[in-house]
Length: 356
Ligand code: KG4
Ligand code: ZN
Image 1 (cartoon, protein in one colour):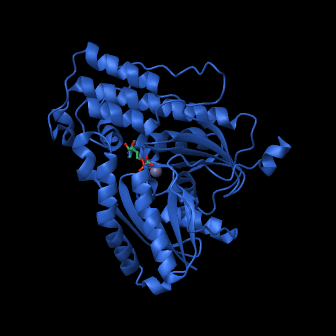
Image 2 (cartoon, helix red, strand yellow):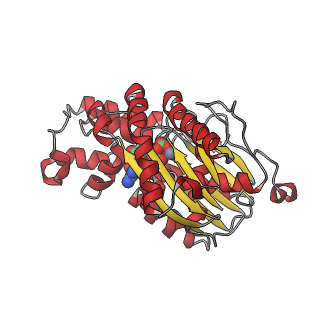
Image 3 (spheres, protein in one colour):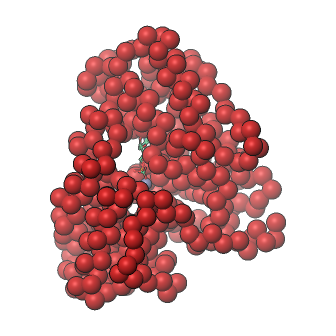
Protein backbone atom coordinates (compact mmCIF):
# COMPACT_ATOMS: atom_id res chain seq x y z
CA UNK A 1 0.00 0.00 0.00
CA UNK A 2 1.34 3.43 -0.98
CA UNK A 3 0.21 6.34 1.25
CA UNK A 4 0.73 10.04 0.59
CA UNK A 5 1.12 12.03 3.85
CA UNK A 6 0.38 15.76 3.91
CA UNK A 7 1.17 18.24 6.71
CA UNK A 8 0.30 21.97 6.80
CA UNK A 9 -0.71 22.69 10.40
CA UNK A 10 1.76 25.49 11.14
CA UNK A 11 4.69 26.87 9.15
CA UNK A 12 5.97 23.84 7.22
CA UNK A 13 4.35 22.50 4.06
CA UNK A 14 5.25 18.83 3.78
CA UNK A 15 4.52 15.74 1.69
CA UNK A 16 5.84 12.21 2.09
CA UNK A 17 5.33 8.80 0.53
CA UNK A 18 5.21 5.71 2.73
CA UNK A 19 5.07 2.16 1.42
CA UNK A 20 3.17 -0.13 3.79
CA UNK A 21 3.72 0.97 7.38
CA UNK A 22 7.47 1.46 7.53
CA UNK A 23 9.21 2.06 4.20
CA UNK A 24 9.67 5.77 3.76
CA UNK A 25 10.16 6.42 0.04
CA UNK A 26 10.40 10.21 0.26
CA UNK A 27 9.84 13.12 2.64
CA UNK A 28 9.84 16.73 1.45
CA UNK A 29 9.45 19.81 3.66
CA UNK A 30 9.10 23.40 2.39
CA UNK A 31 10.08 25.55 5.35
CA UNK A 32 8.68 29.05 5.80
CA UNK A 33 11.70 30.03 7.91
CA UNK A 34 12.52 33.20 5.96
CA UNK A 35 8.85 34.34 5.91
CA UNK A 36 8.42 34.35 9.69
CA UNK A 37 12.00 34.74 11.00
CA UNK A 38 12.02 38.51 11.41
CA UNK A 39 8.54 38.57 13.01
CA UNK A 40 9.75 36.43 15.94
CA UNK A 41 6.83 34.02 15.45
CA UNK A 42 4.48 32.50 12.88
CA UNK A 43 2.13 34.99 11.16
CA UNK A 44 -1.00 32.89 10.45
CA UNK A 45 -2.16 34.70 7.29
CA UNK A 46 1.31 34.54 5.74
CA UNK A 47 1.54 30.84 6.67
CA UNK A 48 -1.72 30.04 4.81
CA UNK A 49 -0.55 31.86 1.71
CA UNK A 50 2.81 30.09 1.73
CA UNK A 51 1.08 26.69 2.06
CA UNK A 52 -1.01 27.51 -1.04
CA UNK A 53 2.17 28.44 -2.92
CA UNK A 54 4.06 25.33 -1.83
CA UNK A 55 1.66 22.41 -1.62
CA UNK A 56 1.63 21.35 -5.31
CA UNK A 57 5.42 21.61 -5.40
CA UNK A 58 6.07 19.44 -2.31
CA UNK A 59 3.69 16.73 -3.55
CA UNK A 60 5.32 16.73 -7.01
CA UNK A 61 8.76 16.49 -5.37
CA UNK A 62 7.68 13.68 -3.04
CA UNK A 63 6.31 11.66 -5.98
CA UNK A 64 9.40 12.35 -8.12
CA UNK A 65 11.84 11.31 -5.36
CA UNK A 66 9.85 8.11 -4.80
CA UNK A 67 9.80 7.57 -8.61
CA UNK A 68 6.02 7.27 -8.54
CA UNK A 69 3.05 9.01 -10.17
CA UNK A 70 -0.35 10.07 -8.75
CA UNK A 71 -1.82 6.82 -10.10
CA UNK A 72 0.43 4.77 -7.74
CA UNK A 73 -1.24 6.22 -4.63
CA UNK A 74 -3.59 3.99 -2.64
CA UNK A 75 -4.54 6.42 0.17
CA UNK A 76 -3.94 9.91 1.55
CA UNK A 77 -3.32 10.87 5.20
CA UNK A 78 -3.58 14.56 6.06
CA UNK A 79 -3.27 16.62 9.24
CA UNK A 80 -6.76 17.55 10.46
CA UNK A 81 -5.63 19.44 13.61
CA UNK A 82 -4.58 20.84 15.99
CA UNK A 83 -2.98 23.87 14.34
CA UNK A 84 -3.75 27.15 12.57
CA UNK A 85 -7.13 26.80 10.91
CA UNK A 86 -6.22 28.59 7.67
CA UNK A 87 -3.04 26.53 7.36
CA UNK A 88 -4.84 23.24 8.08
CA UNK A 89 -7.49 24.04 5.46
CA UNK A 90 -4.91 24.18 2.68
CA UNK A 91 -3.69 20.60 3.27
CA UNK A 92 -7.12 19.18 4.01
CA UNK A 93 -8.78 20.75 0.96
CA UNK A 94 -5.94 19.61 -1.28
CA UNK A 95 -6.16 16.08 0.15
CA UNK A 96 -9.90 15.86 -0.42
CA UNK A 97 -9.58 17.11 -3.99
CA UNK A 98 -6.80 14.68 -4.83
CA UNK A 99 -8.51 11.71 -3.13
CA UNK A 100 -11.75 12.50 -4.99
CA UNK A 101 -10.08 12.79 -8.36
CA UNK A 102 -8.09 9.57 -7.89
CA UNK A 103 -10.99 7.67 -6.29
CA UNK A 104 -8.91 6.67 -3.24
CA UNK A 105 -9.63 6.94 0.52
CA UNK A 106 -8.28 9.65 2.79
CA UNK A 107 -7.99 9.94 6.58
CA UNK A 108 -7.52 12.96 8.84
CA UNK A 109 -4.68 12.60 11.32
CA UNK A 110 -4.08 14.30 14.66
CA UNK A 111 -0.77 16.17 14.42
CA UNK A 112 0.26 14.93 17.89
CA UNK A 113 -0.44 11.33 16.91
CA UNK A 114 1.88 12.05 13.99
CA UNK A 115 4.72 13.15 16.28
CA UNK A 116 4.17 10.04 18.43
CA UNK A 117 4.23 7.81 15.31
CA UNK A 118 7.47 9.43 14.09
CA UNK A 119 9.40 7.64 16.85
CA UNK A 120 8.12 4.20 15.86
CA UNK A 121 8.65 4.78 12.15
CA UNK A 122 12.40 4.78 12.72
CA UNK A 123 12.50 2.65 15.88
CA UNK A 124 10.04 -0.18 15.25
CA UNK A 125 11.64 -2.21 18.04
CA UNK A 126 10.78 0.34 20.77
CA UNK A 127 9.05 -1.59 23.52
CA UNK A 128 5.72 -0.97 25.24
CA UNK A 129 4.40 0.13 27.66
CA UNK A 130 6.07 3.48 26.99
CA UNK A 131 6.06 7.05 28.19
CA UNK A 132 5.77 9.35 25.20
CA UNK A 133 6.72 13.01 25.57
CA UNK A 134 5.55 15.29 22.76
CA UNK A 135 7.34 18.59 23.16
CA UNK A 136 7.05 21.23 20.47
CA UNK A 137 6.24 24.88 19.79
CA UNK A 138 2.53 24.37 20.42
CA UNK A 139 2.40 21.35 22.75
CA UNK A 140 4.03 19.79 25.76
CA UNK A 141 2.23 16.60 26.74
CA UNK A 142 3.09 13.30 28.33
CA UNK A 143 1.30 10.09 27.31
CA UNK A 144 1.24 6.54 28.59
CA UNK A 145 1.13 4.09 25.70
CA UNK A 146 0.55 0.38 25.90
CA UNK A 147 0.79 -0.02 22.13
CA UNK A 148 1.24 2.19 19.06
CA UNK A 149 -2.48 3.01 19.14
CA UNK A 150 -3.41 2.87 22.83
CA UNK A 151 -2.58 6.29 24.21
CA UNK A 152 -3.64 8.06 27.38
CA UNK A 153 -2.63 11.59 28.35
CA UNK A 154 -0.92 11.80 31.74
CA UNK A 155 0.07 15.46 31.71
CA UNK A 156 -0.03 18.59 29.61
CA UNK A 157 1.19 22.13 29.99
CA UNK A 158 -0.98 24.48 32.01
CA UNK A 159 0.30 27.52 30.10
CA UNK A 160 3.08 27.83 27.49
CA UNK A 161 4.59 24.95 25.54
CA UNK A 162 8.32 24.38 26.08
CA UNK A 163 9.12 25.47 22.50
CA UNK A 164 7.01 28.58 22.95
CA UNK A 165 9.03 29.51 26.06
CA UNK A 166 12.27 29.09 24.07
CA UNK A 167 10.90 31.05 21.09
CA UNK A 168 9.67 33.94 23.26
CA UNK A 169 12.99 34.47 25.05
CA UNK A 170 14.83 34.32 21.72
CA UNK A 171 12.42 36.91 20.30
CA UNK A 172 13.01 39.23 23.27
CA UNK A 173 16.76 38.91 22.72
CA UNK A 174 16.44 39.74 19.00
CA UNK A 175 17.40 36.22 17.90
CA UNK A 176 14.51 35.65 15.44
CA UNK A 177 12.21 32.65 15.03
CA UNK A 178 12.39 29.75 15.79
CA UNK A 179 14.41 30.32 18.95
CA UNK A 180 14.95 26.69 20.01
CA UNK A 181 17.73 25.84 17.52
CA UNK A 182 19.60 29.13 18.24
CA UNK A 183 19.42 28.62 22.01
CA UNK A 184 20.52 24.98 21.58
CA UNK A 185 23.56 26.12 19.58
CA UNK A 186 24.58 28.99 21.90
CA UNK A 187 23.77 27.38 25.28
CA UNK A 188 26.90 25.23 25.23
CA UNK A 189 29.05 28.39 25.44
CA UNK A 190 27.33 29.63 28.62
CA UNK A 191 27.39 28.71 32.30
CA UNK A 192 24.13 26.88 33.07
CA UNK A 193 24.52 27.62 36.79
CA UNK A 194 24.76 31.39 36.35
CA UNK A 195 21.04 32.19 36.64
CA UNK A 196 18.81 30.08 38.83
CA UNK A 197 15.28 29.17 37.71
CA UNK A 198 13.19 27.04 40.03
CA UNK A 199 11.09 24.04 39.08
CA UNK A 200 7.40 25.10 39.01
CA UNK A 201 5.22 23.83 41.82
CA UNK A 202 1.83 22.69 40.56
CA UNK A 203 -0.59 23.58 43.36
CA UNK A 204 -3.33 21.15 42.27
CA UNK A 205 -0.86 18.31 42.84
CA UNK A 206 -1.58 16.91 39.35
CA UNK A 207 1.16 15.85 36.97
CA UNK A 208 1.49 18.89 34.68
CA UNK A 209 4.01 21.12 32.95
CA UNK A 210 4.33 24.89 33.32
CA UNK A 211 6.76 27.19 31.55
CA UNK A 212 5.26 30.65 31.97
CA UNK A 213 6.91 31.15 35.39
CA UNK A 214 10.44 30.65 34.12
CA UNK A 215 9.66 32.69 31.01
CA UNK A 216 8.54 35.62 33.21
CA UNK A 217 11.60 35.17 35.46
CA UNK A 218 13.85 35.33 32.38
CA UNK A 219 12.08 38.46 31.11
CA UNK A 220 12.53 40.09 34.55
CA UNK A 221 16.23 39.16 34.51
CA UNK A 222 16.68 40.71 31.06
CA UNK A 223 15.01 43.95 32.19
CA UNK A 224 16.80 44.13 35.57
CA UNK A 225 20.19 43.53 34.03
CA UNK A 226 19.57 45.97 31.19
CA UNK A 227 20.27 43.32 28.56
CA UNK A 228 19.61 44.62 25.03
CA UNK A 229 18.75 42.59 21.90
CA UNK A 230 21.78 41.17 20.09
CA UNK A 231 22.84 42.65 16.75
CA UNK A 232 21.42 41.07 13.59
CA UNK A 233 23.55 38.09 12.57
CA UNK A 234 25.42 37.97 15.92
CA UNK A 235 23.93 34.56 16.79
CA UNK A 236 26.07 32.98 14.05
CA UNK A 237 29.14 33.57 16.20
CA UNK A 238 29.09 32.96 20.00
CA UNK A 239 31.94 35.45 20.42
CA UNK A 240 29.62 38.24 19.25
CA UNK A 241 27.01 37.34 21.91
CA UNK A 242 27.68 38.89 25.39
CA UNK A 243 28.77 36.23 27.98
CA UNK A 244 25.87 37.26 30.23
CA UNK A 245 23.38 36.38 27.45
CA UNK A 246 25.12 33.05 26.82
CA UNK A 247 24.84 32.28 30.56
CA UNK A 248 21.15 33.18 30.55
CA UNK A 249 20.48 30.93 27.55
CA UNK A 250 22.37 28.00 29.10
CA UNK A 251 20.55 28.40 32.44
CA UNK A 252 17.16 28.78 30.75
CA UNK A 253 17.61 25.73 28.53
CA UNK A 254 18.81 23.69 31.51
CA UNK A 255 15.75 24.63 33.55
CA UNK A 256 13.42 23.53 30.71
CA UNK A 257 15.25 20.23 30.29
CA UNK A 258 15.28 19.74 34.10
CA UNK A 259 11.48 20.06 34.17
CA UNK A 260 10.94 17.69 31.22
CA UNK A 261 13.16 15.02 32.79
CA UNK A 262 11.61 15.51 36.23
CA UNK A 263 8.08 15.04 34.86
CA UNK A 264 9.15 11.94 32.94
CA UNK A 265 10.58 10.60 36.21
CA UNK A 266 7.26 11.29 37.93
CA UNK A 267 5.44 9.56 35.06
CA UNK A 268 7.48 6.39 35.76
CA UNK A 269 6.23 6.20 39.30
CA UNK A 270 3.86 3.27 39.83
CA UNK A 271 3.80 2.35 36.12
CA UNK A 272 5.40 -0.39 34.10
CA UNK A 273 7.52 1.46 31.49
CA UNK A 274 9.85 -0.26 29.01
CA UNK A 275 10.80 2.71 26.86
CA UNK A 276 10.72 6.49 26.75
CA UNK A 277 9.84 8.07 23.42
CA UNK A 278 10.59 11.74 22.70
CA UNK A 279 9.08 13.62 19.76
CA UNK A 280 8.22 17.13 18.54
CA UNK A 281 10.58 19.95 17.56
CA UNK A 282 12.02 20.58 21.05
CA UNK A 283 13.18 16.97 21.20
CA UNK A 284 15.83 17.99 18.62
CA UNK A 285 17.48 19.69 21.57
CA UNK A 286 20.94 18.24 22.12
CA UNK A 287 20.92 18.71 25.92
CA UNK A 288 17.50 17.02 26.22
CA UNK A 289 18.56 14.08 24.03
CA UNK A 290 21.83 13.54 25.87
CA UNK A 291 20.54 13.98 29.41
CA UNK A 292 17.41 11.86 28.82
CA UNK A 293 19.55 9.01 27.45
CA UNK A 294 22.03 9.21 30.36
CA UNK A 295 19.36 9.55 33.05
CA UNK A 296 16.92 6.84 31.94
CA UNK A 297 19.36 4.35 30.49
CA UNK A 298 21.01 4.30 33.94
CA UNK A 299 17.63 3.07 35.14
CA UNK A 300 17.53 0.42 32.41
CA UNK A 301 14.93 2.21 30.26
CA UNK A 302 15.72 2.79 26.58
CA UNK A 303 15.17 6.29 25.21
CA UNK A 304 14.07 6.68 21.57
CA UNK A 305 13.64 9.73 19.36
CA UNK A 306 13.41 10.25 15.59
CA UNK A 307 16.20 11.52 13.33
CA UNK A 308 16.35 15.33 13.26
CA UNK A 309 14.49 15.48 9.91
CA UNK A 310 11.52 13.59 11.35
CA UNK A 311 11.54 15.42 14.70
CA UNK A 312 10.37 18.83 13.51
CA UNK A 313 7.14 18.97 11.49
CA UNK A 314 7.07 16.62 8.50
CA UNK A 315 4.60 14.51 6.54
CA UNK A 316 6.27 11.11 7.02
CA UNK A 317 4.90 11.07 10.57
CA UNK A 318 1.41 11.95 9.27
CA UNK A 319 1.57 9.11 6.75
CA UNK A 320 2.76 6.70 9.49
CA UNK A 321 -0.08 7.67 11.85
CA UNK A 322 -2.53 7.61 8.92
CA UNK A 323 -1.58 4.03 8.05
CA UNK A 324 -2.44 2.96 11.62
CA UNK A 325 -5.91 4.51 11.15
CA UNK A 326 -6.38 3.05 7.67
CA UNK A 327 -5.36 -0.41 8.91
CA UNK A 328 -7.98 -0.21 11.65
CA UNK A 329 -10.55 0.26 8.86
CA UNK A 330 -11.04 4.00 9.38
CA UNK A 331 -12.00 6.19 6.39
CA UNK A 332 -13.06 9.84 6.47
CA UNK A 333 -15.89 11.50 4.57
CA UNK A 334 -15.85 14.58 2.36
CA UNK A 335 -17.40 16.65 5.16
CA UNK A 336 -14.37 16.22 7.48
CA UNK A 337 -13.54 19.65 8.94
CA UNK A 338 -10.19 21.13 9.94
CA UNK A 339 -10.13 21.36 13.74
CA UNK A 340 -7.63 23.82 15.28
CA UNK A 341 -8.18 22.28 18.75
CA UNK A 342 -8.47 18.63 17.78
CA UNK A 343 -8.03 16.38 20.83
CA UNK A 344 -5.78 13.37 20.64
CA UNK A 345 -7.50 10.07 19.89
CA UNK A 346 -8.11 7.36 20.83
CA UNK A 347 -8.46 8.05 24.54
CA UNK A 348 -8.98 4.47 25.62
CA UNK A 349 -8.35 2.89 29.02
CA UNK A 350 -5.35 0.73 28.24
CA UNK A 351 -4.97 -2.93 29.08
CA UNK A 352 -1.91 -2.23 31.26
CA UNK A 353 -3.81 0.42 33.22
CA UNK A 354 -6.62 -1.99 33.89
CA UNK A 355 -3.96 -4.05 35.72
CA UNK A 356 -2.65 -1.02 37.69
O1 KG4 B 1 7.31 20.12 16.09
P1 KG4 B 1 7.59 21.48 15.59
O2 KG4 B 1 8.39 21.61 14.30
O3 KG4 B 1 6.28 22.31 15.37
C1 KG4 B 1 5.20 22.26 16.26
O4 KG4 B 1 4.39 21.30 16.18
O5 KG4 B 1 5.15 23.19 17.12
O6 KG4 B 1 8.33 22.26 16.78
C2 KG4 B 1 8.77 23.58 16.63
C3 KG4 B 1 9.44 23.99 17.93
C4 KG4 B 1 9.83 25.47 17.99
O7 KG4 B 1 9.39 26.03 19.21
C5 KG4 B 1 11.35 25.43 17.94
O8 KG4 B 1 11.97 26.51 18.61
C6 KG4 B 1 11.63 24.10 18.63
O9 KG4 B 1 10.63 23.23 18.14
N1 KG4 B 1 12.96 23.55 18.30
C7 KG4 B 1 13.92 23.35 19.23
C8 KG4 B 1 15.06 22.85 18.52
N2 KG4 B 1 14.72 22.74 17.21
C9 KG4 B 1 13.42 23.17 17.09
N3 KG4 B 1 13.94 23.57 20.55
C10 KG4 B 1 15.08 23.28 21.22
N4 KG4 B 1 16.19 22.81 20.62
C11 KG4 B 1 16.23 22.58 19.28
N5 KG4 B 1 17.34 22.10 18.71
ZN1 ZN C 1 4.59 19.60 15.41
